[in-house]
Amino acid sequence: MLRLVARAASALALASALALTATTPALADPPVPAATDIVGVGSPLTQALYNRFSTDYNATLAAAGNTTSPRFYSWDATGNSSIVPKSSADTIHRARDTGGGVMSLVSNTSRTLDFVRANRSVLSTDLPSTLYVAFAKDAVAWAAPAGGHAPANLTAWQLRNIYACNYTNWQQIDSALPNATIHPVVPGSRWSPSDTGLAFFRALSSLSPGYPWSFGDCVTGTATENDGTAAELQDPDALVPYSAGHYVGQVYGGHTGPGDQPGSLTLRSVDGQATVDQVGRAIAAPFAASRFAYLISTAVRAADWNASDAHTAALRSIFGVTGWICSSIEGRAIIRSYGFRLLPAAACGSTAHT
Picture 1: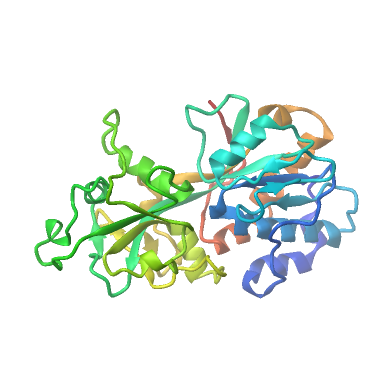
Picture 2: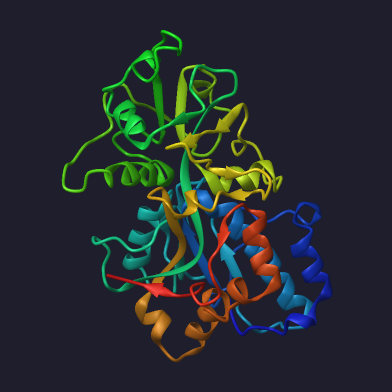
């Protein structure tokens, strides 16, 4: 988390970033970081991505002979409920999503926590003391089991009516479809969706701003987001919100593991628009510009970001416009490998707040 080292300092680190599927596995929960290290928690959507950032960034520092700059660590969203993020820090509840991470960020100081993995930008309910530093874009799609009853395409309004439980049979979508009950699933639960479920909810809510709606009684939950191996998703009538970027990273980047793989699920079109560019192996550009798109960000304290001390320098050396993630060949290669769309150079590392 620190002073940027020269890119040329490590050909080995560059080769690692460009051959991501053949390198040392990324960290899960870190060893106990030092009090001065840059440490975060947050969304499960990007925990594998940040683990990769952590492994390669720290390796780049080591390869350059840099033994003094703060290291970069990220705690997973799964595991023991209580964690001590770094040496001499307070014990906190492990954040399971963006919202929980932001609550921990505003409730603690940099002695305990420095950043949050956020799969969104700023909301009107966020405190002005929280900044969101954007570096990539994702879009929430929908997925269904291959060989099941779901069609290849649904409109946004059809998805909204399915998740409101107004449409409960496939023949309400198309009389040529099977006479079978639709089983909409959401990551988390209909009362408390995960980050991916919330992104889906917000996208469908944007169809009629000012007219509230909610997931209906027919919607069931699944414990893990962006994973197609859950029992409830083997149902031929199931459908579920799914991160298009994460899917690309799983299918084309090879970034899978237990509880983190598409299984039999395939991503489908929305409004006749493909969600994934299978030739380019990326989120389809038009879909990444649709109402279903959102920013992938790192939430930090505004006071930490805007100070003029060593801690600020460390944060900006990782997340800023000229930081390692946004400006290094290695960092940008990792973003692409994990399926997310790169932001333009001027936008990567930019901040937003209420």
